[in-house]
Image (cartoon, rainbow, N blue to C red; front, side):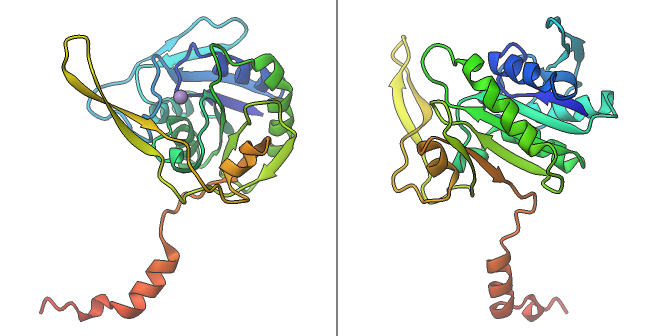
Length: 249
Ligand code: MN
C-alpha cells in the first residue's frame, strides 16, 4: 500500500515522525508536509502564489516540504505521487474533537484526500506536558491502522487518541452540542491590546460522541461525511417554502 503522510504541525513535528515510522511497517511511505506549522488552517488553499516542493532530509523516509497549507500538501503530494492510495494526516499535537473539525488542518488534509478520490485518515492526540510520549502510543497507532486500512468504503475517518494509554477503541459521532471557542483579551509588551482565540472545557458530553470516548479512555473513530447538506431541513423547508412561488416573469 502506498501511503502519503502529511500534517498541519509542520514537517519537523514528532507526531509526523511517529506516524511515518508506524506507516513504514504497513506500506510504502512518502511524507509531504507544510514547511511551517499550519495548525487551524482549516481547508484553506493557496491560490495567489506558486507552491514549492523541496526534498527534506528525514532519516529513512522520502520527505518533501511545501510552502503551503495541509490541503495544498495533499494536492501537490498526490500530483507528484500518482500511485498514492491513502493519506494519513497527523499525528496532530492536540485533539481534534467536536467543533475542532471545522478549523482543523489535520482533518482538512485527510478531507482533501477524500475529495480527490483517495481515502483520508486524520489522527490526533492530546498535547500534554512538554513532550508527547509517542513511543508508548505507537503500538496503538499500529493497532488502529491495521484495523482501519482493510475497511474500504469509508472515505474519511477522524481518529483521536485519549490522554493516557487507551483501554479500547470505539466508533463515535462528532459532538456538536456546545461551541468551545472563546476570545481572551490581553496586552502585548508595549501595552497594546490583543486577543487570543482559545477554547474552554465543554460541559455535558453526550454518550457515543468523540469527546465522550476519549474522556472514557478510548480511541475515538468518527466517520466524517463530505456532503454538508442539512437533509432534514432541506426536505422540511422545501415542503413549506417552495421556490416555485418566486416568479421572475
Ligand atoms: Mn496541529
